[in-house]
Amino acid sequence: MKKTLRKLLPFAFVGIISGATTVGAIKYFDSAAGGSDSSYFTKESKNVTFAGFNAGAVGDDFVKASKMTVPAVVSIKSYSDRASNRPSEQDLFDYFFGEGQRQQRQQPPQNMPSGLGSGVIISPDGYIISNNHVVAGASKLEVVLSNRKTYIANLVGTDPNTDISLLKIEENGLPYLNFANSDNVEIGQWVLAVGNPLGLSSTVTAGIISAKGRGIGILSSGQGKAANPIESFIQTDAAINPGNSGGALVNVNGDLIGINSAISSTNGYYQGYGFAVPSNLARKIVEDIKKFGLVQRGFLGVNSLDLSDDRYVLAYNKEKKTNIKPGNGIYVTGVSEKSGAEDAGLRVGDIIVQVDQIKITDFADLSLSVGSKRPGDHVMVTYLRNGKENTANVTLKDQNGGISTRTKADLSVTEKIGAEFEPLSDRIKTDYGLTSGVIVRNVTSGSEMDKIGVVDNYIVMEINGKPVNSQKDVDKILNKYQGNVQVKYVDEYGRITTRGFKMP
Image (tube, rainbow, N blue to C red; front, top):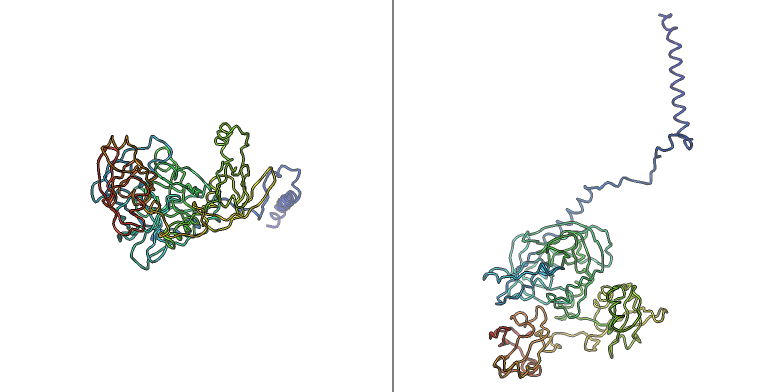
């Protein structure tokens, strides 16, 4: 046995030495690997983490936000009894960016909704915010909650300039969403879009904020009919489709950051570009409607050129024989008399680059920063004149030059019923065989005249049984009038129709 151990000892010794040598070599190379082949092995660091998607954590956030949001988002069915072959204005999605998508719609059967959209409950007593284009022209609005309870809604007010409307149902204790500060949203943050797309109730989709301050030119188009549109949309890639209009765009806390309104698409359906009205602007609109009965809109009082749009700058230079350079900011091309801008000393050639704390790069920035204010509000305007930066304290005014808020009682007849009127020419009277009448102009979407089917270029013959031949005749009949109004009008085919509404 002893002889055997003596024979094995040399081998054991060699093994121990080899092991020690290996361990020593590893220690050496760990501490001094700069010039050795092992230098290409990456060292440990405590300042980095894997960029894997933590589905569990984000999923929990989405679940929480979904549970908070879905009960507060409703389906809105609009019914219209107008007999018209005009395309419906119930959902702007059908017209987005491409004439090939415009299709003639057939009038829906009686007792069938002519349009479907979404809305968001914003108070426990039944106030609901939606889009103007969802409710425009509706004779009846039906609201369906996520629990399938159904209500007939009262339309409190609308604003085509922002595509916002306010509805009310008679109920208490309803789930609702809180408005978040949309100025604080960041590009790249997670959002959820909740609504009723394509008739699929209570649908939740997720995405990110792709951009802010987008102006897409939809509200001033034929279907939007906005005279002074404010477009500064939040852009998202959360899936939005027809029927999502008026639904909620929320953050992962379930707070309302926008009202889904539009998509940019070549086929009328989701292609990754959705747009929502910022919650700050939407909240201001509904607060105005609730408090005053109409939207209070402040104006700067300038005509302007968007320097960020090379095409418009080129066209302006060609027309005016100028040499204005494209860039950021708004170039003042005219100043209205007795406006806040004139009072503050702004003049043609100034370049507006900031309003209060908001940098102005294009029309969307300016329209939001000024259009979300009321008459009488003060804004600090920063502008460039001959390359030098200046500031001016501007008092915003309404379009009539006033600086105080107004109620419905202060409105003109034209503002109340949503149309203007011009005298008929003798030739038109002869062609239609009329002895009286006025041509209708500038019909406002969602107005009383719009609701009864009157559009631009129709002829109004009588109001409340009295012939009308001028705007003054209309004003005289309806000024301070309360009650039902009867309107007798002629359409483009010469058909005579009598319809009515209650004077606002």
